[in-house]
Amino acid sequence: MIGDALSNTAYIQAVSMEQIQKPIGIDFEAVSRRHIEQIISYLEIDVFKPEDEIIKQYDESHDMYFIQYGTAYVKYRDRLGREKLLGRRLEVGYHFGHIALFYKTRRSATVVSGDFSTMGRLTKAGYDQLIEKMPEFSAVMENLVQGYNDEAKLNIAAMLKKIDFLKEGISGLIINELIYTMKS
Image (cartoon, rainbow, N blue to C red; front, side):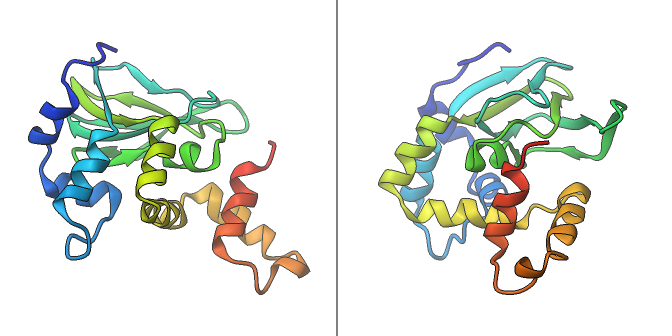
């Protein structure tokens, strides 16, 4: 990691509104440019070389990343220890790390830089300060986490819903919290 290559001010000028809309899921009709700039001002800038591990499966880091330039790919070790590569490539405008940030859990996968990449990193401390200034951002994060559906999450959710008292009346947020905070 080369780290802190750009200042937040330069990053605000370099990031387009469309790039922020995609990863955060913000409705621009409802949120002003000032709010977007405030979110961006909490990002720290990291630059990665090809094949740098940005986050590592099972680590206890809680930062969230937004890809401003470059690509990344996701790999993980299954329960048998076999390394698997997920089929999709993360590109400009994508984000990752929101599950660990929101639930304070270990990383569920490893993300590797596909080429020279510039990313905005939202730390846990930055997230907490942002929520203090913009409480509505917490709902945005809840929606991001709620919308994340990988195969493992869907399987665990299906198993949990077979338990009688979890069948009805339990919100998706509670199911998510159970899934992401379980000890493996």
